[in-house]
Image (tube, rainbow, N blue to C red):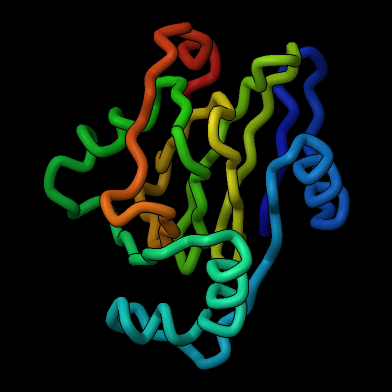
Length: 175
């Protein structure tokens, strides 16, 4: 179940999925929830996972000109897990949308949109789909559980590159 937490200028927690979707969509961030077409297991292959969500993923990719999808699976036993976490903890943007579908695990997307004083975070868990538009300032944290299995979708074969803002804004909010 997704949880939206408004951090600044007002603190408020929102758990209602319809309210979360409206809040995110009103800010240009796509938030949806998807279900697999077949039951999945922890040890399923990337191909099996992608096939389980093809009914949602295929039309989305075609409509938005995405050409590549893969599955990332990080957990506490992943080598260099702290370095992987640190890579995404600084506020950054991307030249293309950042699209994630959470197959399992959880992670926090933090947002500090450039034309607003708002700072908010969205806890994404199994079944949550998010598309952060290109140029949106954000950061990501996979703590405290250190487990994210997610489908990533890209418009270019090499994927996206983080462009760090060096604002330091995230330091006030990171766990």
